[in-house]
Length: 121
Image 1 (cartoon, rainbow, N blue to C red):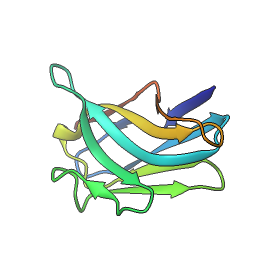
Image 2: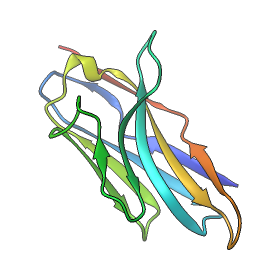
Image 3: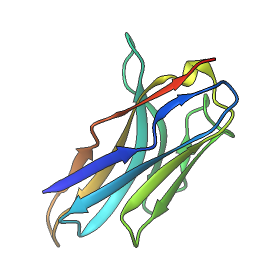
Image 4: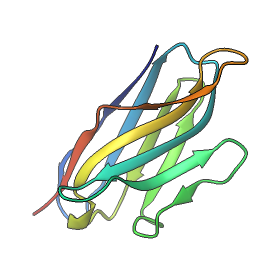
């Protein structure tokens, strides 16, 4: 079984920075894709940034130039550095990974439990 655990959320003032981390544990043979999503009250979950193996990182227009997704394969962790935060970035953030747990196994999607980020003065 694979488990994803997010950390690093909290309250920050507009213009501030936060770094979210997502640690993966369990049976991981290979990772096909990783990403960060967010969901605000009354809105659907939206993609923030993602990376597919062999393809460049993609960012939503709303965060491009402010957020940076990074991956540490040796530690099975991923992070989201968020700079110049705005009140509209307030949401629950979720990490996502598409993982193959064994050679020849199918790729399954896994999600973290979500972590609150609040941008407010």
